[in-house]
Image (cartoon, rainbow, N blue to C red):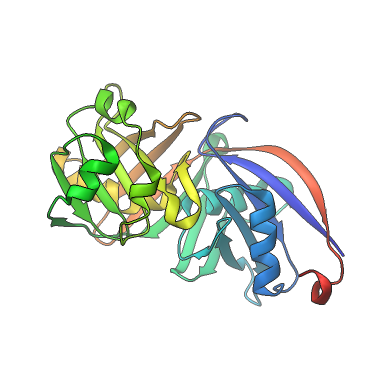
Length: 269
């Protein structure tokens, strides 16, 4: 059994930066255990699988880390849209992805960029846990919570200097930990740590900006923001905030096109 696979660097205009994701086009779903095994074999932060829906321009989309299936992934959605628009010849300018987080709409934009419309994820203030300080090695200004913990610091230098204890982060109850601060040459910067889902540090985490962008929009008094994830690879995210949704815009680059060779699916595991 042979499957096409694309490796895309998302939230970057060039390869070797941004966040790499694998994208596997399917005619019908594989068994979940096989998709999880492919994601583990790829050992990227996300592997996306999509299947065409009956409605024109609509695709079912699922995302797997090396350890688990997740409800939302921004960079792998961008990577999948890039594959459909640039590699598979999708003729329109808009695609709807039917996902565990509802319908996500993406649009082809000028200069090779792609805009994604995601539901806004609210945050609420929580007590700073001693475990959090132990894990990050610095005392934060405040801690917010939603799908992830969002930990606020004074400036970009602090964000760059943090070397978290992943073993301690595994003891936290939410998906991951985002650390964020004002940026020197952008509106804000962030890093994301998700050892619980098999991603110690994610290069660029699109889903995190569905919570980060609304927070910084309110704090800075603006609805259009430029953000940078300052991981080792780095990536740029342009964010727009409305009443109940967030628009994330970025570029992507194709690094590799390959072929997965599996035994018959019922024998694959």
